[in-house]
Every structure is written in structure tokens, then in C-alpha cells.
Amino acid sequence: MPMNESQSSEGLRQGGAWHLAVVTPVFNDWASLSRLIADLDDVSTASATEFSIFVIDDGSSEPPSIDLSLDRLRRVRGVEIITLACNMGHQRAIAIGLVEAHRRKGFDAVLVMDADGEDRPSDVPRLVEEARQHPGHIVCARRRRRPGLYAFVAWYACYKLLFRLLTGRRLDFGNFCLIPSERLGALISDPSIWNHLASALGRARNPLLRVPIDRGSRYAGVSKMNFVSLVMHGLSAMAVYSDVVMVRLLLGAVAVSILTIAGLCGVVFVKLFTALAIPGWATSAAGILVIVLVQALMLFTIAAFNIMSARSLTVVIPRLDAAKFILSRRVVLSRALGEAAE
Figure 1: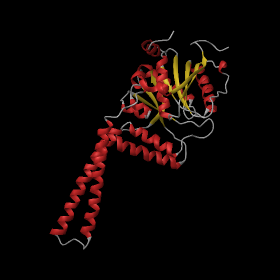
Figure 2 (figure 1 turned 135 degrees about the vertical axis):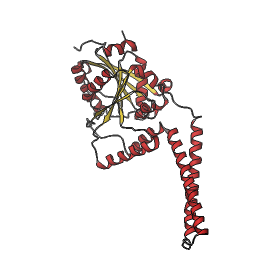
Figure 3 (figure 1 turned 180 degrees about the horizontal axis):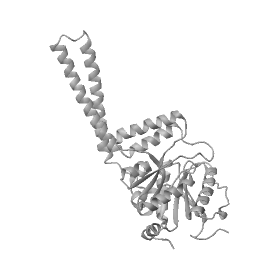
Figure 4 (figure 1 turned 45 degrees about the vertical axis):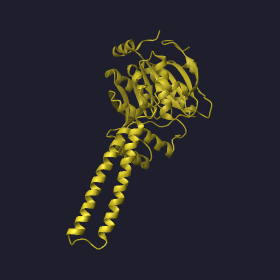
């Protein structure tokens, strides 16, 4: 019989076994998914954790294929493949998966992770232990080490700085997180997770616990993320704070306008009341300042209208709208809790 959320949380505080729903999006990476399922089963066997895995097939062009004897799994209790009608993107696939996990009930928490191996199953017990010690907190993996090309690491550092300047917030964790079941209902009602889960968690001021964890290596193949996808991913994170970004740009445009007008006044003063001006200098300086002023006013106008128009837009609420994007659901493994494999 499924547990309700209060019974589940109480069981966790008393040190009982955990039953986790795993939400993992997949796009043509079925070989990696097979290894992920096997590794999760090995980890859960050692830590007395049971998993039900929700695979979100994000419009893959290759048919789902799990190269693994599911009947031999010991602690993985369920595997369900949820196929989306089209490629929705990584973040929206996660949002739909969270809604599906919430619909099923009976889970102590939801584990969000990628299927490619970069989110290591061996780190799951640590997330579980931190959640056990801090009830009600969402436990997020903060990347302590990010292997890769130096150019990518440098660009990522620049992006984090820009994010901090435009939003006033720090984003130092990704999708790899453990969400208590009692917080899932409110989370899937937040339109922000449709754009970016990590930003939405920070924006909603949920009680977050950041755990330093290294990124793992891919199981197989190469990342499907190209430069355009990475840029869009970064912009999606900022989009969660679009109102904050627009207000900051608005204030920045006002500040630039004030400084530009002060500069123009200074040019006029030097030209008319001193003998310091070089011939032609005042005209050039005034022209440059006028161009800057016009651009600042244009930025002010764009920011103001964006703020006003955003308040009248229709938003997607995952809890209400996720089902519209699901093409099919297929259960490939279903086993009662505590039922042993043959």
C-alpha cells in the first residue's frame, strides 16, 4: 500500500529505508541509460534504498532499448518510459517527469539526475544521508570540480559572473538533486521549472542544501549539447529571473542616461567658459555622448515594455499542462516494494 507524504517523511526521520523516484531525461542515449539502471541497483543494494525510475524519452529518433536483464535487478522496483510527443528540451523533460512522479505518490523523495553518467549513482547515498540529517531540505549537488576544456571552464566562469550581475543571485548547482516528496506539489505548480529547474529552486527560496560533489565521466558517446544548446540553456536560467534582469537593465539605463547628460553639461561648460577645449573636441565628444544617451533611452524603453508585457503573458504550469506533451507511457518493470528478484 502506498505511503502518504506525512507517513513517508516520518519514516525517513526514523531511519527507515528510502523509496526514491528517479527522474532522468534521455535523448537517444539508451546505452548510457542501461548502465545507469545497473549502477543504481548496485548502489541501492548497498544502501537499502529502493528506486522507481521514470525515463523521460525526449522525442528520441532511436527506439527505446534497455540492454539489461531487468528481472535480475534487486532494488530497482520499477522502470517506466514516458515518451514525449516531440523534443521538448532537457529542462522541460525534467519538469514533465516531476509531474509524473507526483501523480504516482508513495515516494519518499524524487531524485533528478542525468542518464549519461556525469551525475554519479555512487553519490546518491551521500545526498540521501544529507537529506536524512536535514528534513525538508532540497539537497543539490554543487560541482566542486568540472572537468573539460579550459576554454569551456573559462566561459562557464564568465557566465556565472554575468548571471550574478544580472540577477543578484548565485547559481552553483545543476539538476542533480534530491527533492522531498512534501515539496514536490508546490514545485510543479511553479511555472519557472518549465525553463530551468536549478534557477527555479533558487528563485522560490526553497530551503536548499548544497553538497560539494565532483562531476563524473560519461558512460558512452559524446554530449548532445552543442554551442547553441549551451547558450539557450544559460539564457533559460536567466529567464527565470527575467523581471529582475529587466529591472536591473532599466536602472542601468537610467544611470547611464544621467551620467551622459552630466557629461554633455561638462562639455558645454568647458566649451563656453574655459580655454581648455581643443578645436573640434567639443563636437566629437558631444556626438559620442548623444549616441550613448539615445542607446540608453532605447534600452530603457525596451526594458520597460518587456516588464509590462511579461505580466500579461500566459504561462505554462507543469502540474496542469504536462500531460499535453506526453505521447505514451510504457511500464517495462513493475515490482512491489520489498519483493525480491528471482
